Length: 133
Image 1 (cartoon, rainbow, N blue to C red):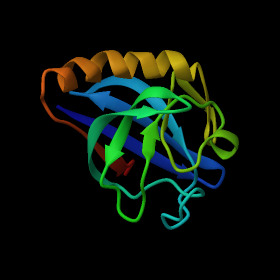
Image 2: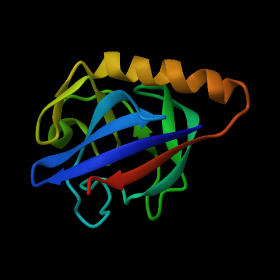
Image 3: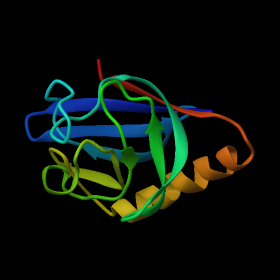
């Protein structure tokens, strides 16, 4: 399975759309691009393997495996990238501003409902991150 995260970069945050086979699953928010610096930047564009990971704060989450010069990049709920994220990706139901969105938990549940059964079946899931051209 391959999901596509198509991003638009802004000074106040990065907004995106996560889709599968051309169908929108949810939108997303991230920190602005700041040269992949830990805790203050979104991660580089690329193709990442998604895995399940147990996180103390957020419980069972999706994580991105093997992110260059980064670790513990999760997909978890947040509505304000600059206040709530440290390099992770937050699914949101709708972007409402630069790096801001709403109903993040609902969007995360929608994404997990799609991805978890595939992972549980032993299949691989990739997230391909690109920018809007």
